[in-house]
Image: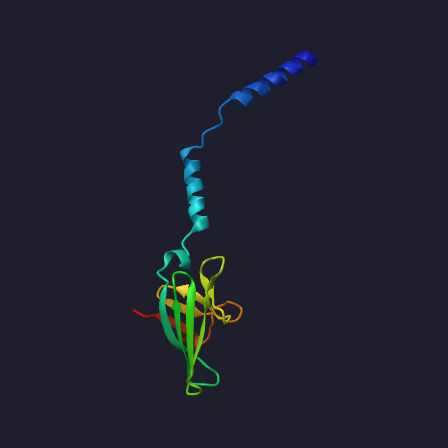
Length: 146
């Protein structure tokens, strides 16, 4: 009986080892492709025409507003220029590399400011990376020039 059991075991092992692997069905291939496109997905970084010049005046607690101009370049370098209106009208300039978040939606500049990158606009975020809400929220949007 041990010989019969051993023979059956080897026969089963031999037939499964020598058989061709199952080919994925068309549905499986389509599901794999769909999953890949979902995981890569469209993001602000890869789907929008984000390089360019953005400007606006954001609210300021101790001045008339902060005139803000950001140049974002395709190589992720940036230049940020700010002027505190009605106070010290010097131009403050910061340059560096914009760092994208893992989702490809937000950029952080060297001064620590964060922006949600939208269609032809940058939306300034708070210090925790969240959208600013309230009656002044619309004033934290920089529009793309030209």
